Image (cartoon, rainbow, N blue to C red; front, side, top):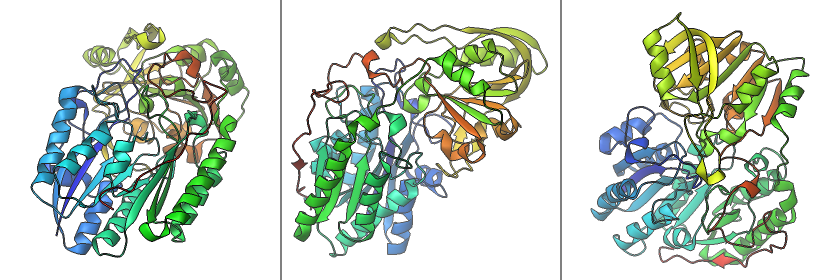
Length: 508
C-alpha cells in the first residue's frame, strides 16, 4: 500500500500588499518548500496533521511519498508561478500511483487566477488519479469553501480549536476515516453548507460563546458515531472571494445521510440565529491603552489585532506602540515588528550602541488607503540574535521557527523586538530565544488576534484587545469588497441563510 502525503498551507488576505512567492513557503527555517525525505524529516516529531498521516502509514505498513512540505505566513495573493510549482509537485507524486492521497491544507489560499486554490489542487488531483481514489483533507478552522473542494474530496475535517492546538488530532481524524474507507468499513459522503455571514475573528473561537456549543455539538456527534466527521469552519473573512463565510461540513455514511442532514441543519440554524453575536465592537486605541493603565496586576497583554501577520497583516504599523509610549506605560516587551532595514542598521551598530532609528512604517496598504508611518525611537541595542527557536507551546509543537535576524532595542523600560521575518507570536519563543521572559514584564504588546492565547494565555493576568489600524481590522466597512457573495451579514442586514449545497463525491 502506498500513500501520497503533502502539506501546503497559506491563508491569503487579498487586501494585504505583501505578495506571496515560492520562497515564502518555508518549513520553519530556510526558504522555499521541502520535498521527499527532507519534507518527511521537517514533519516528523511535530504536531502537524501530516504527522498523523505518517503515523497511520507506519501502523498500516504503507509506503509513503511525502510530496512536499510548504507552509507560508499569511500574506497577499500567491503568485501564479508559485502556485503552479506547488501543485505540480503534488500532482507529479499522485500521478505515479498510490492507494490514497492525504493532504494537510489551509483552505483559504487564493492564488493569482484561482480564488479557491485548494479546490483547484483537488480538481487536478482527481483528474490524474483513478475514479474513487480516497483523498483525505485536513483544513484550518478558517477555511473557505467552494463546491470544487467539496466535490473532489472523500473526507474533510477541520481544526476544532482557535488557537489551533488540535492540528495533529485533526489529521488523526482524517486518517481514521480514510483507513475505514480503505478497509471497506465506511462509505462517506460529504454534506455542506456555507452561510452568508462574515464572522469577526475575535468572536470565532470555539473556546467561548457564541461558537462554543456549536462546535461542542459537532464534536460530540463525531465522537458518538452519529456521523463520520463533523466540522464547523469560522471561515476567513479577509479574502475578497465568492467563497468566504461560515461553513459546516459533514462526512456522513452513505446509508445514514438523513442523520448527516439533520446535524447539518441543526448546526447551521444555531450559527445563523447567533449571527449578531459574531460581531466584534471596536474602541479607539487611546481608550484601550488608558484602560490597560488602570489594571493593577500584570502581565497585561495588549493585543494589536489590526496588524497581525497571522491574518495577513504587515506587522510594521507602529500606532499602538506609539500610543503606549505617549501614555507612559513602563516595563513593556513589544513585538516582534517586521523591519529588515532597521535590523540591518542595528546589527551594523552592535550590542550596546546608542541609536536613533525609524522603526516600522515601511509598507503602504493601498487597499485601505493607509500609508506607512515610521516611529522614531532612541535607545540602546540590547541583544542581537539569529531569531531561531523551537516551538514548545501547544500550537505547532516541535516546529523549528525563524524570525530571521532579530534585534532587541531598549527604549527606557520598553524592550522592542524587531525582526527580518514576520511571525505571529503564538509561542513565547519569539522572546525567550533572546533571553527575555515576557511573564516577568508588566505589559506585553503582541501583534496577534487569538493565537497568542496558546503560548501567552497561561500567565496573563489581563488581556486588552486593541483595535489598531491595518488590513486585519475588524471593521469590515473599511474594506472595498468587490467579489464577495452578497448579501452578506453584517455588511447587509437583509442577508438570509443560503440554501444547502450537498454533494456526493465521485470518490465516495
